[in-house]
Image (cartoon, rainbow, N blue to C red; front, side, top):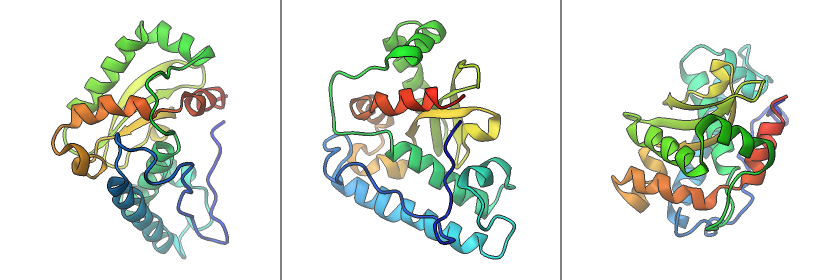
Length: 206
C-alpha cells in the first residue's frame, strides 16, 4: 500500500531531495530546480499548510486530501505537493542505461510490448496533453498498468489507481531548459528515472 505523507508538528514539509540541485544537469538544470523545487513546490507546501488550518483536513494525510477533497485551493495545493514529491523522488543523476526489472518489467512487456514501445506511448501521452498537467504510469491493485493523462493537479489516486512514474508537463518544469520543446524534455527525462524507486512503488501497491 502506498505510504502516506503525514504532517510533522501540524505542518507538511518540503521534500528533501535525494540529490543535489546540480546533479540532474544537463537533463534538468540547476536553475530549473531552483525555481521548480525551491519556489513552486515550496509555495504549494506553504499554501496548503495555511489553507488546511482550522478545517476538517488539518492533520490528515496528504494522500487522503488528494483522494477526497473537493476541487479548489486545498485540493490543488495538496495534489501538486503529492505530484511533485513523486516526480522529484523518482530521479537520480543521468544514466544512459536504465530499465525496469522483475515484476514491473514483466507487466510492462505484457501490457505494452517492448520497453521502447512503452516509452514511445508514454512520451506521446505527455506531448499531446493540452495545457498543464501530468502524464502517469499507474496500476490497479492487481498490477494492471495504465498510461494516464491528468490535468492540472490531478493524480491517479483520485481514479482508484496507484501512481508509479510521472512526468510533469507544466511549462515551469521545462521551459528554462527546453523552451517550447516539450517532446525533447520528455525524451530526455528517461535518463533520470531511478527504476529501483518505480519498481518498489509497484511492489508496494498491494
